[in-house]
Image (cartoon, rainbow, N blue to C red):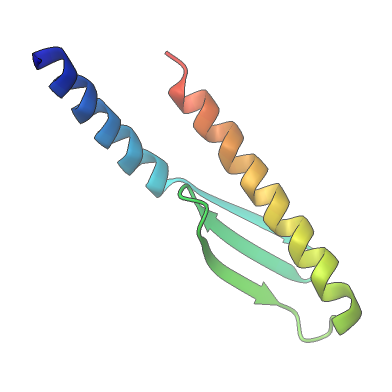
Length: 79
């Protein structure tokens, strides 16, 4: 039982560490900041971007940010 409680405590610490992770991705006037819980904290879009480019650029930034966070989390979970 004590081992289980220790594992739960370590898991909570890891979850807190994950939430504190941040990544920033910028592409062609789009800036996206995402935290370790995969929540977008900030999205900045240049006013000079044509609306036809917004969708693909935002999608690209989002996907890259998720990938960066996943890589960091995977390395953090290695013993």
